[in-house]
Image 1 (spheres, rainbow, N blue to C red):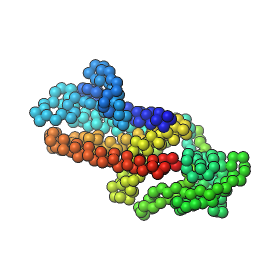
Image 2: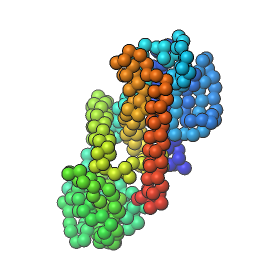
Image 3: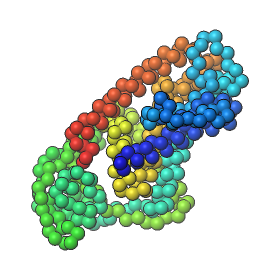
Image 4: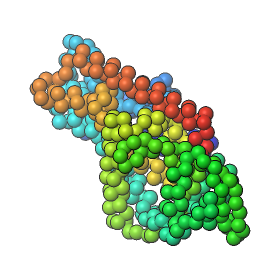
Length: 359
């Protein structure tokens, strides 16, 4: 139940702010909005206020704002005042970019809240104390708990958590003898087998790394709101660069498409974050908000980025892209999105069957 509620909260928040961006920009631009929907049809509930129907769809995997004349397919269509296509080019550009922009702003604000409430995380140095244990992972199954301190692995002692993690990463799918002190100071030991995780080395080659499902201890340094806001911006910029780098690595096949995840992965991560606390859930929401913004500005027809490509062509040619051209491009874009959904859903199912979600 926690996973389901966390998934609904995170996805609902991100879709709402995205579509709210389109909606506000359209209204301010004098464009009529027929429908503001959270979720896709069939319609679950709805209420019409003024010219706009506000509704919730039964399929909770997105949402949309339907503007008058936005996707007109009639060849003899003539834009009327208040139609999307009747608005000046710059206004239409602002309406389309407003959705991703709202997701970027949301990411900054959520990171700001997390940093201001919790402070800046600082990893505990000179210690192998465990601060996080992944439910169902090798460490959890062996009896290692939060507060335990690893004393040795295969007889090797470590200066800190990072040294220990580096040792484990070099040993995927290998049985290791681990010794630790539990919270009461009692020495315990157990044999566990590391998990395998796909990674990329500095040369761009794929490799496997070992994991046992533990994380270090962090202390949090209180900071003021201005510093928290600056750190929120810095985190957003850093993650944006990382995401574009990942996209490039996917396109150049430096990273396998098997690394992509879909709704099941999002739900799983949302559930785990919720169990760690509300701040962790907000941090995940900020990260996913950024993902949603970047995904939508990719130049794929039917996404916001595809519409921006159409507007750019219109600006260069000084006339809109033909309806036939838009329909063909949108059909291709829809096909690509369906293919992507099939891939990520398959990846999710593989993770579910192999138990990676539980680790």
